[in-house]
Amino acid sequence: MRLNRAEFALMNNPLRAAIQRRFETPRLLHMGGALRGGTALELGCGRGVGAALILERFGADTVDAFDLDPRMVHRARKRLEPRGRRARFWVGDATSIPVPTATYDAVFDFGIIHHIPHWRRVLTEVSRVLKPGGRFYAEEVLARFIRHPIVRRILEHPQADRFDGDTFRTALQEVGLDPFGTRESWRSFAWFVARKPDA
Image (cartoon, rainbow, N blue to C red):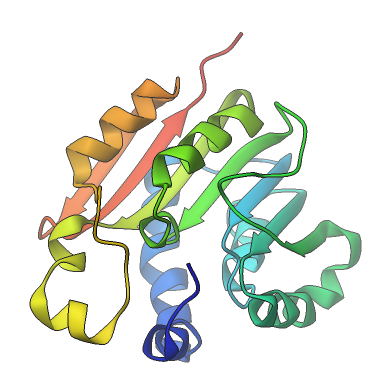
């Protein structure tokens, strides 16, 4: 689903970018390590902050990224234009990723999956597009936060079949991924790193 006005503003401000750079990225790096090359995919690229971090901090050689909102894709392309062919963007849907099986060394989710009604389909696609030995890095918002009465008044999220940390970990295992690193804060926010087993 597309972001409403409040969340669009929330995602497109310097504070959100600072949190992503100074807190989320170091935590995921600590949990799952750097890539040291390879090709990565970002689900829901927003204005391109995550894609830049995947190249700069995680060490991917190239990054592909997409978003459901064409406005976001336009902003991301402008931001990453100096990177040339190292960054590629398109408008797309995370439940149906238009690439061959076993394409990526890593897939990144900076708080996108909780916006998607059929989130389990996304995890199936993540597992499909990851190479054996590839890693999935995810930062997510949990059901407790999404269902809070104040949050529900301001932000629009799907309400059916929302996940807590245990549900998300189990879903990762069900699609063939091994969640070897997990962290939670206030039962509202969580970080996961999972690995696709070698063939």
